[in-house]
Amino acid sequence: ILHPLMAKILSYASSYKFILPLLFLVLFFALYVFPTFQKQMTAAANMEIAPLDTRFAYTRTEVINDFTRLGNEGRDLYKVVTGRIDMIFPLTYGLLFILVLAWLIKKLSTPSSKWILLSLMPLAGMLFDYLENINTLRLLATFPDISESSVGWGEKMTILKHSFLFLSVGLAVILAIALVIKRLLKPFGKPG
Image (cartoon, rainbow, N blue to C red; front, side):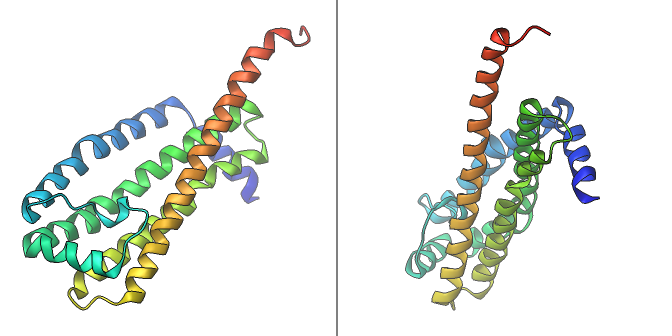
């Protein structure tokens, strides 16, 4: 029951009328919202500090040093960005990835194909992003009493998030190449 219903929803939603607004929203976050807050955090710290979720790895010492440099104002801003803005962003980019993958799979097979469920892979990246955000908020709340285990757990969530998002992007590239090949070979197929 779940497969046909989910396939139908994904097939319906994977259209330009849903994908384009999500694309514009993701671009708005990436090109305006996050850079604006990054400038404010840089001003608070008097130097550029990369948010934890943009790194591939970080240590307890790096986290303590960065949080110290941010000061109260910078840490408060970081809490707002992580607790509000970055709780919306995974939903937008996650849905965009899901719908783009569903659209590509739909074009390569049929709208009701069980393969369309592969498009749900970005859900794992979204989950790890939320777990990472919750951990970052906990680190900010307990600063300067930050444990090695809390930082290590957050770093694992960051690595898993990046891994699943890279897999999703990689899958999209492979599917896009397959779709181009399919369309290029179509004129050579059987008439019909």
